Image (cartoon, rainbow, N blue to C red; front, side, top):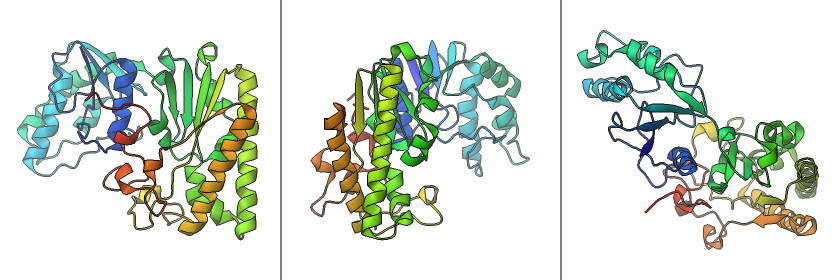
Amino acid sequence: MSLVISPITNHANRDHSHRTGWGRMWAASLGSELGFNKDWTKEGKVYLEHGMEFNARSKGVNVFLKEPKSWDKLAEKAEMLSNFKGNLYSLDIDCPDYGERLKSRVRPHSTDRYKNLDFNKISEVCKKAKTIRQKDLDKKGLVLGDSHSLSAWRKDAYLCRIDGQTLNGAINKGFDYWMQDFNKDNLGFIRTYFGNIDIRHHVCRISEGEKDRIITVSNLIARYFDELNKIKKKYCLDLIEVVACLPIENISRKLPKTGYYKGKPYWGSWEERNAAHIQFNEECKNLCLKNNFSFIEWPKSFYNEKLEMGFENMEKPRSVHVSPRKYMWEAFSD
């Protein structure tokens, strides 16, 4: 048996956690399962999933430590690393030196259990971990997109998730910039999922009125399909799938500041962004038919009676992402 675990803080055992969704994706990719708060020291094989927002430049660990209980809880997790004797793998990145990172957090008020951790042993264990990246798997195709792409993954595909990536920027860079990292001979299809960020932050911001907005969206989509046809020819792809953009949620939705652009959660009124969303999906659908691509739509249940994105379909308590319970793939084993 094997487990996918978060080495410092446990994966949130909540149905609607997008961050835990990344761990669920890796577990599905590897035929494993999430360990959550299990003691994994006696497992034969363990995969370390460091978190969607892991900061490689940080020298410590991102844990709030104040009360003795919090120090001892972190020490308990660290002891699993020092006591582990099985096969250890690091997902997405080379394993950080958690021994040094944990040691850097020692303070005079740390508990004895934390101060007495074998930091050198933890470092040794981390150095032995083998790295597995998505490109190391054996898959038939690729899902390429921004942070939303996790919700539209296929289990027979690699997943290349580029947080914060606009469709406009991806076209400018060229999809091949990311595709070349994957086994060219294995790629029979690609599924792309871009556009939500462009509609939320940029289309209305850079457009001067309705007519200009319509032209902006049409030009973006024309470039999108030019790029898709370019990679279809280069990689001899059998199938191209384009995922529709999400409905626009009610403006009362509270969003984390990490999702803001130039200090605002969105640019343009709900009506303007909804019009851009409808146009984007309609034109993409028509061009998919014309080019013999597949257009992947979200279910009608995502829309409430006001044609807004229903909050029940989104990550809780606040986020722009789809809840893992509503992913296009089965993220739960129950």
